[in-house]
Length: 418
Image 1: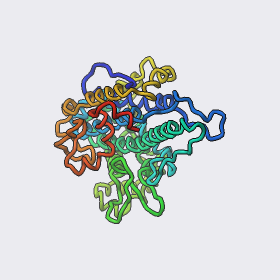
Image 2: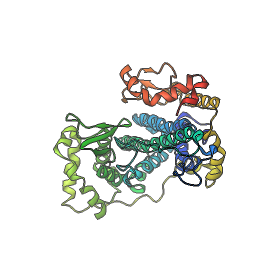
Image 3: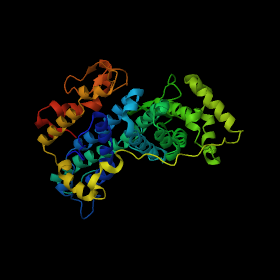
Image 4: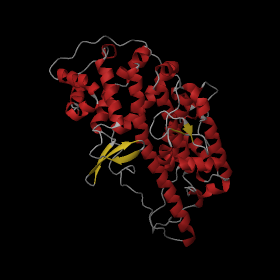
């Protein structure tokens, strides 16, 4: 059922491979496998074929969660400079992937009508037609909406994680190969991308007179004591400051009139409250003020030779351009999975993400799945998630319980999970 299998490789290559494989499945195969919604009442084809009804959302959500787990591990790896250096040729793949997660946020894909909206709830239309099909239609529609909502929520999760990865890469750019810095500054123009993300603020919403911030995978209401900058905002500002204020990183970056206009629109956002929260942004505020009255500095030419991503499009392999065929092979296993297949898939995923093996990538202890702090205990049932304290485990339980139950519950209970 898993979309693509990585070749025999070291653990770090496996993490990046799993990340890119899940992204490929999410972008190319998920839209083809997920059945369309049932036709409206009164339509000649109101009765949806049983073969096209989604029985459970669990297989889809499990693959989506693997991608979220992979980028979480990658962010933990990037926290340590020595681990980042060990990634070597994979760094270009990591940069490319992180940029791809931020582009949709800049393109306003996460709108107020998004299912990730704080008060948004999906509605199941009234079933019509044969009474024997009512339960199947309602269940299938609910499972489909759950998959779509999780996919949209995941877009924000991946975007926030991608900002963190770019921030960590920027902070240790002096130890990275020159091609990585060129990728950040010239190929993808990450400073402009970060400026656009900060300008659009996809992790903030105002609804029903209340302000909300998207943190730790969910929308939280902003209170009086809430800091003005959320975690992804702080990381985006820090990455932007590192790339623009370091003479070596900025040496080949031309601040053209268009780039200058985008950067100067950030000045009002560096208010006193934000500077008090993150004093390190004061040099960036002064640099922006100077930029407004000074001409751009000359830049040195970009290198003529650059490196290519190590994995890149190779994840798709011979299936590139044959997504319909591959989706047809996977459709039955995703739409109508056998309980034993779900049990086996969950066990395989738990083995693939065995943190005893992943710990070899990190010089320090694992991090808590809820708050990101160093963790010393893991879930006693499935042993696939780490936590720093019981309160974090209780908080993360609604997100973790489905995978946890499937791994160790009897196979007969998986039929009731949607």
